[in-house]
Image (cartoon, rainbow, N blue to C red):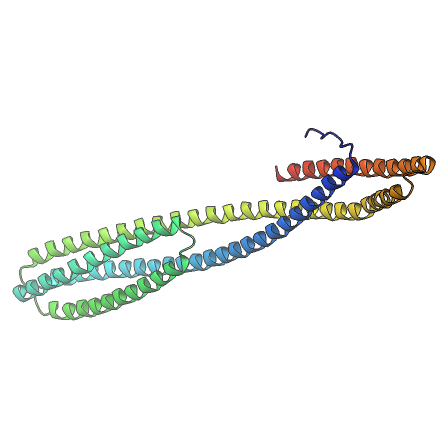
Length: 313
């Protein structure tokens, strides 16, 4: 920073000093505003962290629910194996059984379509959640709605299971056209394998979401560390400003008061050269003291700026 030429006029020099003092007061006010802004940001980040914790708990709950669904599918597959053995022993009233199976297939097709729509909705929601952190409240409401929908789906599965139990009792009484029934069961097994594959894909998507949330948590930690460093720099800068205010108050006030007092005395002794010369000498001493302090203040400000830059890097 280039040094300004020292003004020869004491009045001009005093005005320049008062301007510097006003600049220092403005900087102190700006630092207070900056501290308030940092405090607000810290509060917002703590809220975001709390919302992320709630979202992680909700995902863990969903994972448990999907594991339960997978266990139910395994049990259902075992039940189908038992049904195949039973059907090998029976071959009667196949026409009525076929009509019942056609009705069931229609119902299962509807259930499958609903599951596909629900899966697409979940994929869309996950994409939106990864892009947004400010809309967690709306996302939580959406998850509540989805849980209600899943509850309805679970109720429908319970009804379907009861219907299958009823069908098993009916099929125990019938044994006709077994070849066609076996082909239908093979088709149903293929559909259930597809459902299991869809569940595996959904689990992989949840793992990916968890990894993304861990990355977001790491980014928040890094941002928090940077804010801590910035707070330390601001604290040291504020201490430096307080020290500057103290130096200004104690070292500048006396020379300025001396110069003002001597300037009033100059008017009284304007016709006494000897006294006037002494007064001018006193004014020169006060001006030199003021100049020395100004240089010290400039060096102090420069050191404070360098220290702040080192800590922010």
